[in-house]
Length: 269
Ligand code: NAD
Figure 1 (spheres, rainbow, N blue to C red):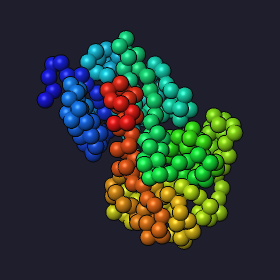
Figure 2: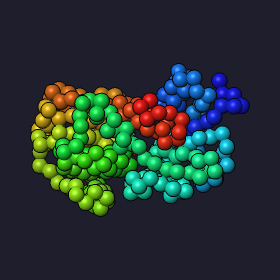
Figure 3: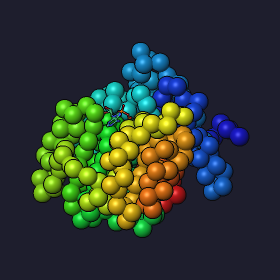
């Protein structure tokens, strides 16, 4: 029940009906006796600037989760960004301060890492391959650098995009080894699909099947795609004996990070 006294958080994107955050947040608020609720907002792009201006004056709104396609465009409209959101040029969460100032962060990478740690995988010193250097791939790659991964390789069909991201990361983490080239997959401790490939029922793989055969059975293989839960990539990795991490695990793991940034939940929620 939303009452006059209920404080709100929002999630904004377009379309919005497919997102799971409202169920997850509202269930947590109810289970923990919080007088808070999340609403889902499907906003037209031409009205984004007006929406952001409304947030500044929206006194009973604590913050807003941001999803596709607005993570990049909204990063340019806030009052302050975390260092990683500024480096990535994208936000997935906004906190509204009591004076109306809007502070953006991107916790996709933290959520990803929380899920890998739940699998017993500690990234420090490890060798990681991230396939896909778009919004979520960049956030995961940044998170891996923050966590002190030993070697990071970023691959993308859009090679200049992958090279640009590697350059940004080398600038932010000068001691890190970040590259774009690799031979087989056998040397990687972590291989991540951060592309939309495998979504739906296309049966597509983000890397050629022959190359995937070179995965080490000791590797953790992760996918960001949320539907299906077990993508063809994860199914193949599981058949090879690898541990696997699903897209929904990453999404669920970052709820506490999103909630903590908005000040409505502890980090570990
Ligand atoms: P994006 O469009 O910004 O980036 C995708 C990148 O993948 C592009 O750079 C593209 O060139 C590259 N790519 C596509 N096919 C490729 C291939 N076969 N090999 C190499 N590179 C390839 O998209 P995004 O915002 O980063 O989202 C990617 C996926 O992540 C989406 O499916 C989204 O739903 C999912 N996602 C999941 C979570 C989660 O919590 N699980 C969070 C955010 C996004």
